[in-house]
Amino acid sequence: MEQLIIFGILISLGYFFGRHAEKKHYKSIQEREKHWLQLPTTCSKYVLEDDRIIDHCDLVNGSMVVSVDYFKRILARLRNFFGGNIQSYETLIDRARREAVLRLKESCPGADQVINLRLETSSITKGSGKQIGSVEVLAYGTAVYFCK
Image 1 (cartoon, helix red, strand yellow):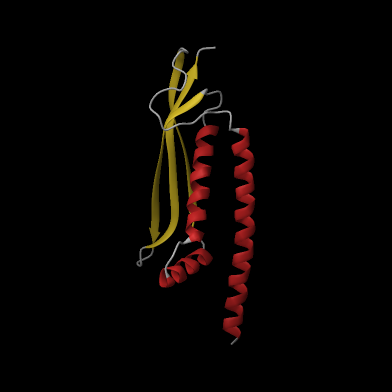
Image 2 (tube, rainbow, N blue to C red; image 1 turned 180 degrees about the vertical axis):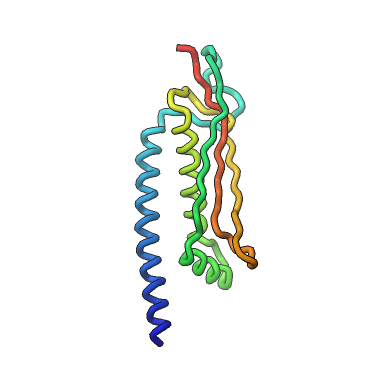
């Protein structure tokens, strides 16, 4: 019985600390997204303003690796058993995607726009059971600098 109580306490602590860290990360993402809102980013292959002269272009990227915690893994297993959306993984992917795009934008200060934005995702497995240990999102594109 004691082991079950200890397990429950550890799961509760993991849930509350994990939610706190996730909310803190989302807040950081939202603040940084407001700061980088002025940098247009598109998946189009062409610049948005074709009447301006391009000074130069650079390949830029940003990546984020997020680990799957045990609480999310337990929730996912329960959801797989009962069926439905695995919201705990959806928020994990959303945070990783948004963070990767922000890191891409932060890697090209002074750029006028980023075109041809692409996102790649991959899972990093661990153990003999091929469980997902973490998820990586890579954002890459072309930073365009116009002549001033």
